[in-house]
Amino acid sequence: MLTEPANAYARRLNTWDAAMIVIGGVIGAGIFLTPATVARSTSSGAEVLMLWVIGGLLTLAGVLCYAELGARRPQAGGIYVYLREAFGLLPGFLFGWTMALINYPGSVAAVATMFADYLCTALGLPSQVYVKPVAVGAIVFIVGINLFGIRAGAWMQNIFTVLKLIAVTLLVVAGLVLAHGQPGPALATDTLHPVSSWAFAGALLPVLFTYGGFHYLNDLAGEVRNPQRTLPRALGMGMVGVVVCYVLVNYAYLAGLGHAGLAASTAPAADLMRGLFGDAGATVIAVGIACSTFGYCSIAIAGGARVLQTMGADGVFFRAAGRVDARTRAPQIALALLGGWAAVLTYSGSFNQLLNYTTVGEWLGHVFGIGTLFWYRKHFIDQPAPYRVPFYPLLPLIFVITVFGVIVASAIHAPGDAGMSLLIIALGVPVYYGWQHWVRRHPVG
Image 1 (cartoon, helix red, strand yellow):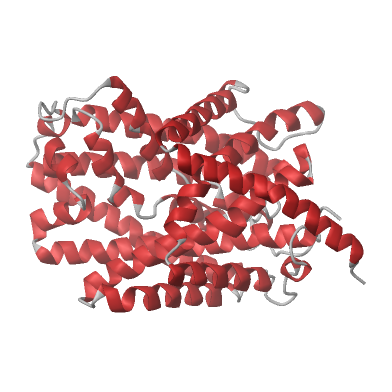
Image 2: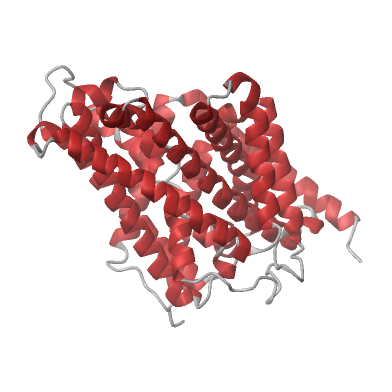
């Protein structure tokens, strides 16, 4: 049967919890590092801020589409569910195969390693000795908390999202203090970094990637109270909050370091805090980044496990993974499998290449996921919709066309990674049919 049990999950997430998931899923480590990459592809502070505003508006268009999709199908699984219903089980499986088995655990492994690195730096521990054990320990701890249910996971997530927002606030304050109330230098043209219009357009790629992660709440939609009302509100509130944070942080970088200083930096957050507070400031922001990355791992594990659980319930993954514990209402086996695989990737050190290989697959998932909105509007034209995307079909078309352009640009920039991403997706086809054959020969019960 292609639907999860009606009462498998308990709806325990309120609007605040859901908005914190959106913020925590987007703000990871990117905003503390990516702005330097963007600055190197631009020639002024005004261009940097313009890119972050454009990226934020494009992402908001996608978020509004996800709000309608989540309100229409408020159940666990997110994009996998929309693709399965609109295009069939095979397309849904190919997304789940790429994301839940490779991208989600790969991103957890990568960000957990980053968390451990920043934590070791803050504590003065030798990274080469402690990073992998600390990263695996963080993954095990997060899985352990989530085994007790979404309420325990949300409690932990809320704490770490507030901590990362405090870190963002510190950066903004530091930048404004260092600017001495002079906004002009932050927006000035940097004559040392003239760039072409193509480079400026290409800088939108890392901006959009840094805005990624807004879809995790849809993975957890089966546990949101009054989802038709809460999902659109939380997605909108959370994403607007992220855009404001990102623009303010970039202004702070430019105000405190200048465009040339930002472009030359390899760790802009640490450089900005060091400029005001010395080495103690760099240590403080290292702790803040550690909190931010830890919070992201918590959301990725929780969301990815729900995709695995839904696939298991559909019979395209291990049936045991499709179970939801009757007492905690948590997909405990799916959580353990995802966390275990992420821990293996962490120790093997192979996650970075896997992430490079699956980036195109992830964004193709967004393109086709938003594309299902047109299918829902056509096939359920008379069905009352609790929330509808404004300016339809303009907003979903803008998002789909822009993101597809980003995918093409990414493929041109790194054709090897894009080719491997498509190959991984294609390998899912024989796996799907082989699994279906095995299931037919070994029926349950």
